[in-house]
Image 1 (cartoon, rainbow, N blue to C red):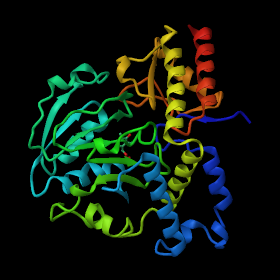
Image 2 (tube, rainbow, N blue to C red; image 1 turned 120 degrees about the vertical axis):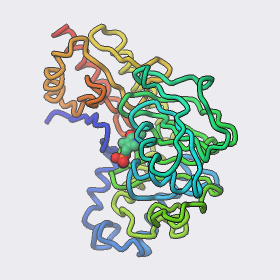
Image 3 (cartoon, protein in one colour; image 1 turned 30 degrees about the vertical axis):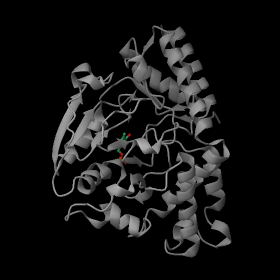
Length: 360
Ligand SMILES: *Cc1c(COP(=O)(O)O)cnc(C)c1O
């Protein structure tokens, strides 16, 4: 069988050793005679799984003690509501930087709860760059500042930390969490749906500074209330237990393979290979400004879009899966999260060279 490399944007591929371990443990976890998904979340064994996963994530990201790690439901979009409900007290406004589809989606949802102040929007610039900070209209009294450091659809990644003064930064890191070193102290809150760089869908990781917990609006549903989730160690109601367990295996895998520093190097190497291939060949293009090119999601276009379907068919035949671009952007997109081995990118680059030679 041809080896398959899966470039799906999410749910995305998971590391092979993690999948193999989960398979070995699937029916009989830790000699319990049942699967981890068949155990009570209140059991001593499962609490052990959950605590280990939390501790490993804390170690990986060097999370300071004045931050809480919460495992929640509802994905990235759930946090589009949870953040305003929890952080804006009984009615304040918040600042939003719009750099692509996901940060725009966050504004639309937050609009249900507070005054959204769009401090800059790159819509006119077709979302291939980021408005410079000198153009931003920040509000010193904002409850928080929200942005998306990696726009999964457009492939726009911001590699610097916005300067917002005393206003806490909320970052939607759904598609680049754990991909590079960050300083948690720069943020008030980080959230991420699991299905890109953490594990299966259905799980959401929230890392929040403790002083931002406890002022939720009265109407906030308990399952979205950070204070309630914190007080119950993320087990207020039944958490997505299997997803949490699998995320734990991914954290272990990251620690065993050298932690964030090592995966960051690996990610830099992979994205460099792919962008070089795109830039060296007139047959392909990526429209994102150099500084803002994502290391996780690489959209690219063929010079002749009538060849798109041929490219997709032949790449699929070559074992390269899910390269079709997002409908908003068109063309192709290769998502190369932590789990994608360098061999996958090398195989893609080779395929792209051959395809360009054949049809260019
Ligand atoms: C995928 C994604 C989301 C949405 O996640 P869901 O879990 O489907 O709600 C939000 N933000 C970003 C940056 C994403 O990549």
